[in-house]
Image (cartoon, rainbow, N blue to C red):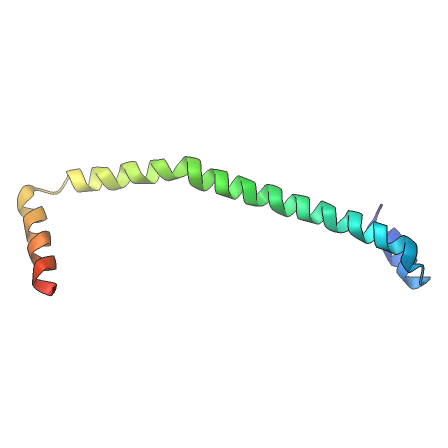
Length: 78
């Protein structure tokens, strides 16, 4: 069913036959939106580990003195 059929049914006030067409159109749109959400979530889950590795590399580059300085600054703020 197409949106043109749906519009035709509405214009002729054939609401009984327009209702299933509307349901099919909405189901299709909902399925597309769910597929996009699944892809986005899968990307976040499976690609999130890559970002964590980069953060770990940044931490490894700090010297012991720099880490102590950061920790001292945090203690001073409290």
